Length: 334
Image (cartoon, rainbow, N blue to C red):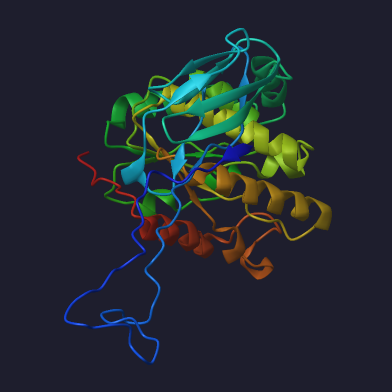
């Protein structure tokens, strides 16, 4: 990210004149009427826009102008290569049209900042990835997917909170007391064991697209790093693209993401996970539609039943973190 920070037009008055009745400077060197302290210097107003990745034939990526003082924000105009990206000033999004790096200049009367849009091809066939992976799961998985759709059709509402993602939120084998925990609440659990972000990128259209939940709560990413073999950079990019797609399909849904829970083995992968979590926390911070909950440090090895998943009583960590973050899970009307 290249950034130029300019001081907004600020007038400083630092000179005071005193006169009257032969009154002169204080013999002790102090200025009459002055308390001896320098006048406060106003803080510089700054504008920053982080670099973003955008993908060809994918949902537009969001860029976020961050003003140090939103009260002094100014309307921005943009200069960029229109053969590389399609930019929406109103939505603050860029859509990749061709592969390459696109330098974007955002400017106003008093501010100018540059950021880079990294336009990339998606390095895999997401649908084929889904079909390849699904054969390694439960033989009845296609039926299970249809059951989720039927459950939504029967019980889902615009007030429903959907829990989804990997095995951490799989109510059939891991979070087995989910419906006891959220008894009386408008909440459904669609977690799928062994899934990673590429699967849920596919399921954005093949499971979630016809749903309109108030909240989508996810634990996802552990299988990207530990099982899929993604590097930290690959997993970070994959998660950002998945959430970009999910937000595009569910624009009115608030997304909540728990940082990847560390497994109690493989120090190299643990290091990669820490890098992914750090990068994702920064990425989520300025996006109003996604909330990152950093629960990973709250789990210790003795809280895991198989070196991977929390013991059933330890799921309180997720529940408490959501409550502390202010999620609103509606009461059930069923």
